[in-house]
Length: 373
Image (cartoon, rainbow, N blue to C red; front, side):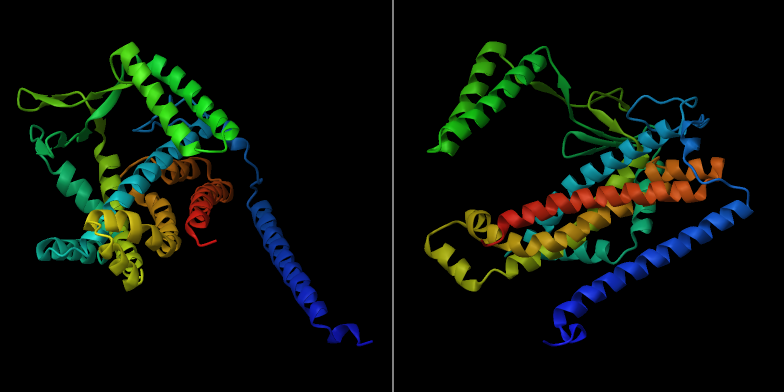
């Protein structure tokens, strides 16, 4: 029988155990160093400060907050603000990136080169500079009475951007109740009827919508379109602050430029034979791209797309440069007031780590669905 140290399996296990031991020792040494330094400075490590009164205002809040609330409430406000910008940014940058990526392959010379100019300009310009441009040039530099109209229903003013938005109606609660019941019914039918599942689900959904429309005579929400009065006063819609609008625009167009190249590379990675097969079936270019090419390109697109989504979430911390009160902004104010550098930095790290892991989890699940089994 060969000695234990000559077996490959032994060295594999031993090397992993050794690596874990080294990591544990390094962490213990660093933690001991930190505790000694804090004791020398007379600082006790702990998160009891989160219950103290914050005593500072936050300019933009989506949940109820006042200066007398504790630091934990202030940090929650910052977290909600960060999640708002991340979610909106992920949606808009996906739309911009896919549109620009497809335009980069257009047969139209003007469309193709305009997309190229967009990608090269935004991809090769620092994000911080772009944020300053959107904030100071597009919004703050405007005169008080100056209003710019875009796409017929979007307005830019020095108070921010105003978009059409949905408002509740008298039928909203009825729609929500019946849609919830309909969703439960679809799930039950999906499980009980193994055959024709998709047909049953679609039929049930259509029947539910038609029934609700006949009963309520209106949709679940009404579109509130902004309108201009007296050349400068705007009523209706939803107002996004200059800080939120500038940050959203900057993150969207900056990240969208990288996503455009990812989409272009993914589409071009589809074998030429697939293009020719789709053309031989007589499919129009739009249908060919949507039904044949793009689903196959997703296998190449999603992994690098995940990295860009993570970059967007982390780059949102640059909001502090233009005064948008995101989580990093509020945490920095908390640190300046309490002096708890270690605890605040740990909270920041854990928050961004959690957001990044959540995005990675969703994208990894999506990636599994498009891979060849």
